[in-house]
Length: 297
Image (cartoon, rainbow, N blue to C red; front, side):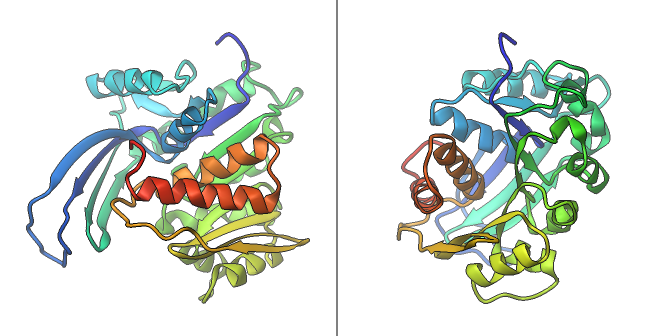
């Protein structure tokens, strides 16, 4: 790499296999639609949005030395993402994600990120061997981190001296992995990007609104919590208070990747000097544009 990147995206880089139908779907439905294979994964979705905003993010992940892996990294490079530091495994296949979406939203999804989990801390080598940083010269840029890493590795990252100076931005990847973010509450590190369900799982409570959930996350140790709730009010909470805003009303044509787009747009807005309220509004607008299908996936 010619220079140290300002933006790192750490986590899942895989193929998204998405089936979409214009029909409302119920359990066991068999309907016509379209099936696509696209570069995806939380870390890559965030990186691709960074690239659309003119940034050049670098990826830290695990990708197999198979044909699917070669095709995936070639696609990542074409999308404006730096892949030189991705860990390539000879014995682990490239990960995949499969989802089915109907007119009534996400029906079901399965994330096969086992290769990323098995690669473990090997994906972080550039942050520890001096390539990007080390324990005595920590990486000082922005890091977008996703919860597809193991709970043990996320706990390690929350205390890692090589990331002590980084601006950590963290997303759980899915409600099923929300509790993996608990170390960042215990260490009061980073900015958490969660939806209402994920906030409830982290707090072991049920919430009726994003502001309520975000305030509780801060009480439980979060340095900062950004909570979304679909078409309802979203908010940004710190110890200094809660900012809330309702997203624009749009016709929803897709949902996979919307949260990642929101997170990336919010980070870029703040990198370019936006205040908390402005950044939240810009991120909600970017996510609305994405789910309406007005920008490419």
